Image (tube, rainbow, N blue to C red):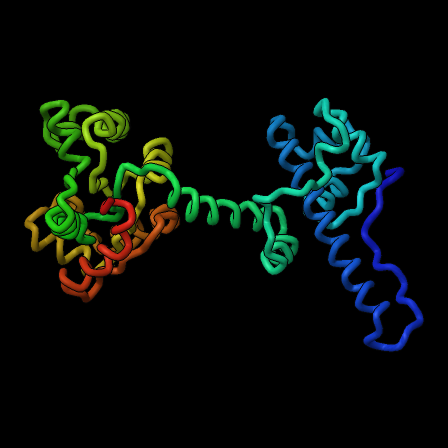
Length: 313
């Protein structure tokens, strides 16, 4: 497309190796790379704010979708003409995508260089990780939520943590049962899992009104409800209590609760499959605590260190 351009390093000056001109050239390339990255980030932010796809913006601005992708990833040195066509689609001036002095901006060259090397998907993942790690540290959370399958140690460790910190321990499934006056088995039998997930979300929202802070034990299947799981991640410091399939199975048997495996001929195979299915969601927790082969005291000590900033004020 007319006016599109890609960054091409300028020819080196004919100066002795290691001279001042070479140093200035390296610094100039680094500055140009940073500038392109910052402009690309601003273009992407405007596009997302407007709810436009990359394809639609490229068509409206008369540039190729591939080039727009390079621009947003900091790999293209866009002309003012192209930037004008892009910003015009959002009712903005070119200055809207140009970097300005910002006392709160990124002042770490190594971090900036790392971000510039990432593609769009990797930059989004980096943003999510940073936001999850640091945004939570500066906002008022409702406490700690323990994730994981039955038999991971949620009840045992949640109870111990509650006694140690004097923060209420709440079992979400039990709160659902008390709210409707029926046991878990009855709810599932009468209404099925979809109704239970809706009741679970409503109960979770109601608990926010009842408790300023809490240690919340979630059901193993809460990750199946995108809305409930997202609410957990936004409102709690989350910890995935992880255990091996063999320990999960043995602990459930020791509790004399055979609901998860009743009537199944290949219980272990099913359990392994369920753990694998939920692993990606569980791994989004802020911390992971592996309880396999460990005693309660050691696990509790590690859990306290993970959760202390969020429940001890």
